[in-house]
Image (tube, rainbow, N blue to C red):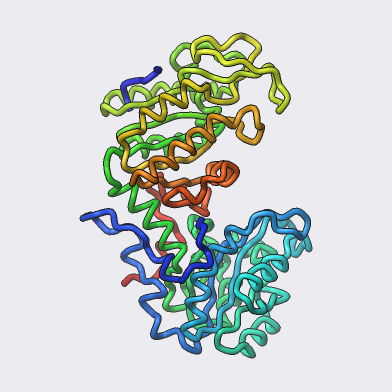
Length: 432
């Protein structure tokens, strides 16, 4: 065992209360969100109000067909709550990365249709997100109606957070609810800018739940606490890895970034992915872990392939015996068994990044194996938190997403929060 001494939202249609902060992490300092107002704090002020809600319905599409509606489902409890309180609800969101104005393939039409199905009522799609026609649609709406504005990123001013555009976006509305954790790390017009024109600006249930778990667990989670950091590159995870090293008792490193660490230990890695510019960084992480008395676990065996292909020839080798011309694409069975033992006593576990190329069936055993371990830990009473798009996708594919304590809807936002950064979309909300 290579131990280096160192260191869905599945119930979207549930009652709104189910998406209020779901867990208390003991006597502690308040999380970033707990000092902010939520829709529950202004429940008596909502009747008849025109409410702009920033949701994250940036869902994957195959043409006009939604292939995963998780983000739309996760927005429903907040919208239902607002409706029940007599608000006139208007949802705004982005979809994809349009380059030069409106593009039909990035229209929110499919999202409005799916949201309507989930709500059991028509969701009117506005033809734009600003302008007189939008203002008229909102003005003519009745209490309990739901409108969806067209893609905010059809305007470059959205990401630039330009004040003139922000003012036009906010003009038809009385107050603002941010329920889009996936974009809370961006100071865009629809996440941060509108808070300068709409008051109060408060959080929805999804945003509250995300921060309660990600911020609350990392800051005040029950010990022993472990982090599983995977993915292809050290460069994209180094900041979060260093932050988690300060807070966690144990760290598991997996995925392509493993080979930069193995090279840092002087081992041959064949043709495996290595970031040569980050070898010294990996050495520093191992040294820091040792200084802190933390434990880092790297895989003891590796599934290697002769090429990057779903049909590649494979073999299982020890991590210190990767042959020339072969690349590592997954953890071996010994590594998974050691991870199970390593995590057995942990009470809080955060996973960000897969253990291998789980998209290829030959190389999904390491990732699905760690997901199985986390499912068992959750059943035993541990808190398990899955952050990052690939980790969430792996849980969904393995069929174990519902077994986790919390599945995050935000990739970049969850990373930045785990790194300890302040999220502009949260900081801009009204204080209690």
